[in-house]
Length: 212
Image 1 (cartoon, rainbow, N blue to C red):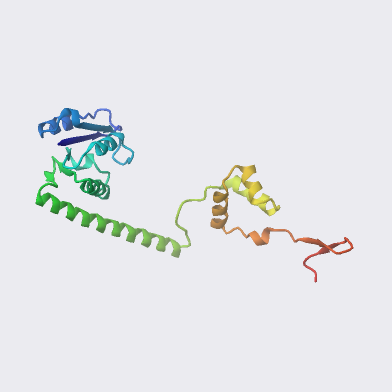
Image 2: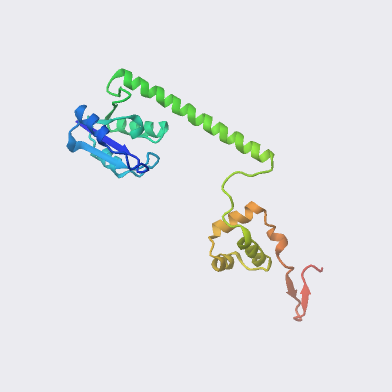
């Protein structure tokens, strides 16, 4: 059985599924077996696509008007098609004349898979090179600190005044993991900020713990 999937972006109100619907119906897809989404292709949570994938049974064929209607990227597209293969469901794209039920279509998708792996390797290499270059310039990669400005100054003052981290989190409304990560990023000298401890002798007189 042929099952059709259509998608248009909600960013453009002038778009409609009419062109895709006509092409899928002309290809033999029953109107009762059409699924659609009005969402960006970058979204993973597309209810129409989810319903279509759940509806498909072994031996069925998922049909789209164009490849970019299904996947948000080459690697995402291959992930979906590989999931279809595990369910013994074929895939067909009308515009690209791609059909995994044919030897040529299957071979082309294997080529796409190799290209996607190559693309991931290049992306990883560029990221590592960028991080290395930033490190040489004294910059650190990753997300910017979640606590900044006057709030951070107030928190540091509180910590320097020997307020506990738990109390800081309660009073300033921050998560403990966020606080720890921010302090690590700025290199807060925790050990140097604490006041000298005071101790007492057996007679009860104060004794500076730094004295022997």
